[in-house]
Length: 242
Image (cartoon, rainbow, N blue to C red; front, side, top):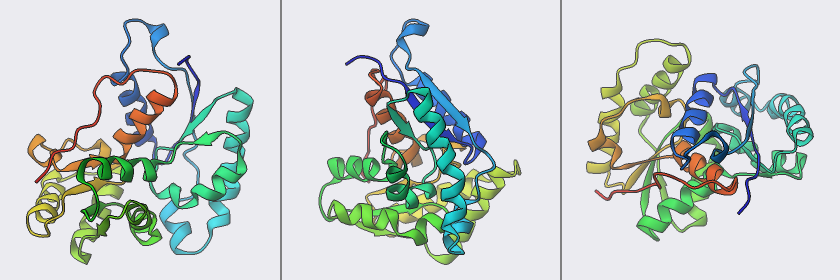
């Protein structure tokens, strides 16, 4: 496959976009600059908060703001688009209608990877923003592959949200809190794996023992971005089982 340029709509948040870029570089097999994939990254940090517009039914604020990004990427000649923000995929269908360029579906690709490893009737947990959880995008994604999505209890969900927004605000993070939530979801709730479904969570350094039970949706997006752009993935995703 020849190389194809990748467009990225980032800024949701900026740190997560930086991590996405670094992961693409780190996970592409390349012995020189020319063997990496071409990318056009738009760090549109002023896009409205996705959770707020979903919960307040103000979807048009986000859609009107993001539409100009598709025009810019079309003018740049990209052939696929990656959006490293799970919550924004609530608008996937509307965004795809805005452009003839294929948007990589982060949610569907993640659920597909889980089903490939764990199969039908798997019980899958999620760590995400309130917007992502309440939007139902991962619940429907799991249903499409005959799997069940399990969401954390209210206390755990509040801890997840605090962690996500502390990362956005560059405040202190207690990673042990997230690690304990993951352990509870796997060993107490009998979930086969936990989806890290917020790109801010990709900025954490969780211990290897916990990560065995996680699938990071950003890692899936990174892998598919490399593949669709004609690159070779260095470290394909591996899912462990409890």
